[in-house]
Image 1 (cartoon, one colour):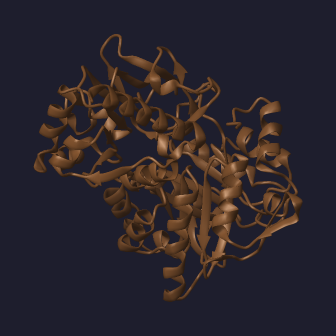
Image 2 (cartoon, helix red, strand yellow):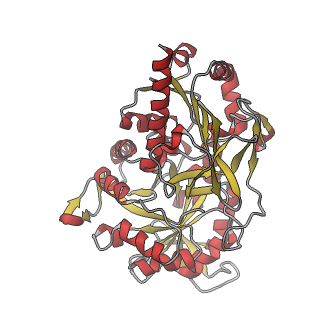
Image 3 (cartoon, one colour):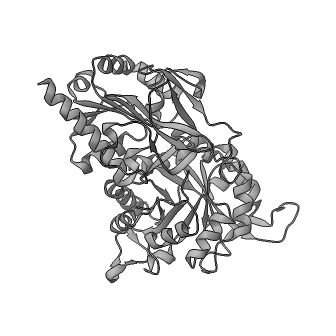
Length: 258
Length: 214
């Protein structure tokens, strides 16, 4: 049966990790390619890169990173951050990524999802959805609103309705990030994760809030997520991918162990 | 030398990178001469069956592939490549290459997962393969090894051809073929060390054949 996936997420700016990643023996890596290689060897099922570079020059550097990652790891990886056109998506996929993640640009222009899916297949298009808890209203019946621009700008759209629409438009997967939980280390937002996972047929990746292995189990079990995104919990050498998977395995969740 | 059949399939560069990493000499080519000279062929593929068949036909590659495999040239199909080796696909109701009997069908919408909820489609992620028949491809692999899948349709080859089976809402054939003509539904180029091992096993088989032919 299908394994639950564990996906480390790396933020890149101007070709370097925004924060160094610490591995055992206190090795501190700033090079995204070296960090990706370490996670690959530790049993990561996939890797997500977010490019937070703003400049055009930085974009070129980033594409070079994507190429070098593709030569160093032999698992799928996806790339997100600021992608807003089909040619940009093509550049990233040609450089060697399996998937691209669309976020704010898809909210502004939902046809970007269908055009991407048509050009590259649904399997290559991930919707990155940032959701924020709000009061339930007729416009936002789920009580979770879509926010864009890194969580700063609410758009008045229901997060669940957007997820369902994105699936219809051809998204192959949804990476659901809770703005409320992000950075708290108090656990993933289980309510919206489960709500979305139960209302779409495509896989949902839970994101934001992991502070310990039990949070991963909750998101996969109660939250019904197919995968969990992890960042600081692995970047600061608090847990290894291997030990997190052992924890999940011991609690009866199907994971891939190497 | 292996040749990766170039028909602008999404994963052909990834396959090339994996072979480079293994030190296996390979080219990505649509040139009939180069394909004929290769010790083995890799038939990649990502996308839709209808469009892929259109590209293959307009480049005349469908004929080249049929001729070379008929002459016994080893071929390894991957993902969409694996599906269009059969006779027909439900995807876009397409007549496919027919290198082996069988057809490609969609995962049923009504299939249930172990938690009794509808399965997710596409089948995306890591899964195991039960090795149901001996094959040189399996050399060095363990039953617990997992492979990366991403697909909404799966092969349903004729009797006796299944080599590996996988469960996603139902037990389906994930690897099939006969000696020298093999098809993998998963992506060996993205399946970590066990996937790379299969590519290496295929190359070793091709080398052996080339040596015997000399």
